[in-house]
Image 1: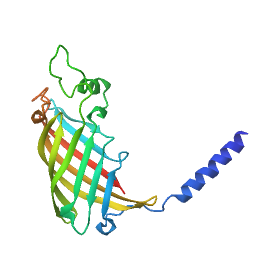
Image 2: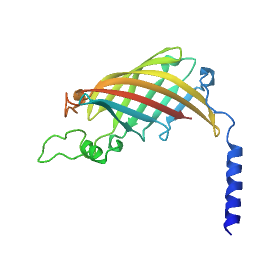
Image 3: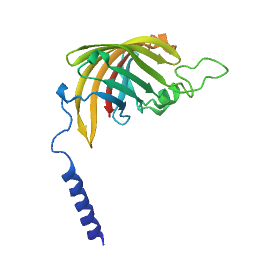
Image 4: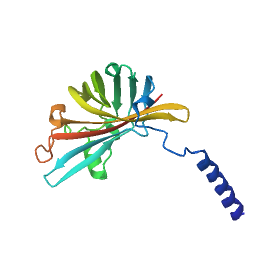
Length: 205
């Protein structure tokens, strides 16, 4: 019985492997970009945030489970638009205590140290795109912790192609914000006010 199960599993695995592409379906060739409206792939979109922790080490965590849209036409790259929502409540660190602190409800009516319990989603909406080759400057408004400020992303095309019958496109981007400007100033300057954001953004149509 065990042998029959293992044999069936091996056959099924072989069939799956046989259906997999022989090379990555994505290409760094801009010609692979298909115009249209895309939605965020929440499984492969990550936002890494990094702060200077006490001058000893950089400390980073992640935001995930994002949602949103991208409209793009490779013939008119400056007309691209992006609208992304980031659930702050899903913030990830490798320390359960730190994660809990980031989302801890304040006591006795005081202001939360960081985001507090049930924080509102963050939201980025582009206002202007300036493309140059495979890079672009994306100006927009970031709403974080209930505060909206202008932010500029330095974005770079990573790859595009078709996977499982759907068009995919991906970018990387980076920017720097000051958390105190968004009302998250706890621990400054021992933990840096400057927060570096590194983004891996995947979209599917």
